[in-house]
Image (cartoon, rainbow over all chains, first blue to last red; front, top):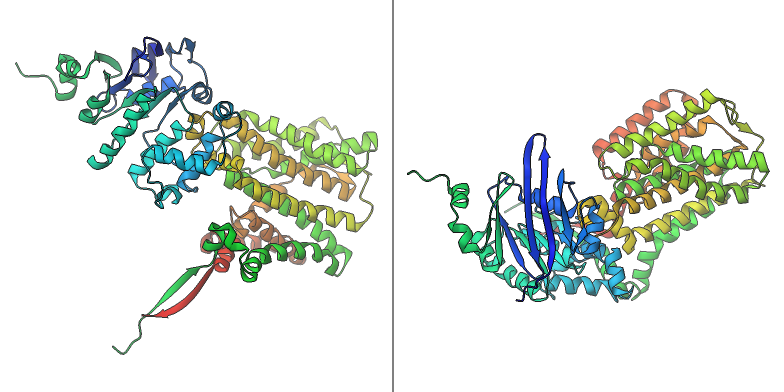
Length: 253
Length: 337
């Protein structure tokens, strides 16, 4: 697990207001190559909005986002994904009418994959099944061939992750991939993410499952009411007064 | 127990054929099972003009072909791309006027004006609809229904291109056989081409856009560009219909922007079954002759239309073709328990 010196993803004073509510307020962060950053915070603290701002699904009111020195702000989502910053969605909506593995044909048709494979991808169905195996689908089981809308939640989350990985991205942003999963399912997801980091991917994880997140994350950022209230190594952050207050309320003195 | 318990057993014959490609050619039964419906469709359409009693009914076949093409195009765009187009008349009108203007100004033959109108019209319609393609929701439907209405008013107000009279004395087809086989041949080509297309990788991306365009965007694919291409395909088919009609009548005018070209294909699609592509053809095959037969009873035919449509929406929302396909692929029989 080697974290490079290079800053891969950088946000500078990003803000977004929705009808008077400051969803994200002056948030900045630096993400180094190969690093896993966790973003935590109470519900409605702006975690997903921050991700939307980074990936171009929502345009920031002010502030800038850079990927390897190139400005991402103002680019449409597909251009940002094309550069190698991809994300999963919190609400799983697979391409319902297709079998699970066929869902991955869509990202394989993207310009990024066409460029990197030079148009020689081989049998696409096999590439899809390989990708599903990478995120923990059983290869010989019937599951990859099931219609996507009938998959259980655990597999939908994996499918969503596989859709990102199909692009061979440099930054993966996971929006609550553990939520709603059983302990056993999470136990099989953790090695998947560890392997991605070993392969050199830079990862952001939004998570409510703090114990699992702290096992993985190199650093943690805490948001509350759209503002960054702490950043650092997991143990330090949880000792932080402001963070304890946000999560557990003010202590009576 | 005196009463015999029975339950309905259902066997799916198609699963094996559809999942295992090799199995399909393993015996005559399977080959027939696969080929028969396709063969019946192709031969049926090709023989139909020969058995028609009169020239009048052959002309009815021509307009049936036009509505079938429009319906197939509507189905493709609505079910596979998720764009509901309520303005098929925009496409027919634009195609008809391009072909009509070309024909009247340069005297080109239909063999040239129709292809030019198909491609050029497709391009123009796509450009007209481009502004609402990045949006999700009902905007596309609303804009498509407005365009044909607006264009009719503009042409009337400016009194250009024949105004309300239209452009007449255009070059026509040499004989009835060219007329009828051109459109029926086109129906078959478009039908099989689109069916192939929606199952190719390209079609999977389009279906992905319908199911979840955000995820397609996050996969690094330019959704608007793909939507524009799909709209171009649909518009080109519609423009072909318009150009064909202007050559069929030897005239083009404002009635080619009429609401009929928007609504009847949708009715045919609802009746035939959304998402089957061949269903809309079936719907057009039923509705067009029906409307000819009912012409005798005047305004009442609109009422009958409404009743037919309503009963399909209420009692058989899946449409005829989905039902037929299911019955064809499955055996049902009663089993003793």
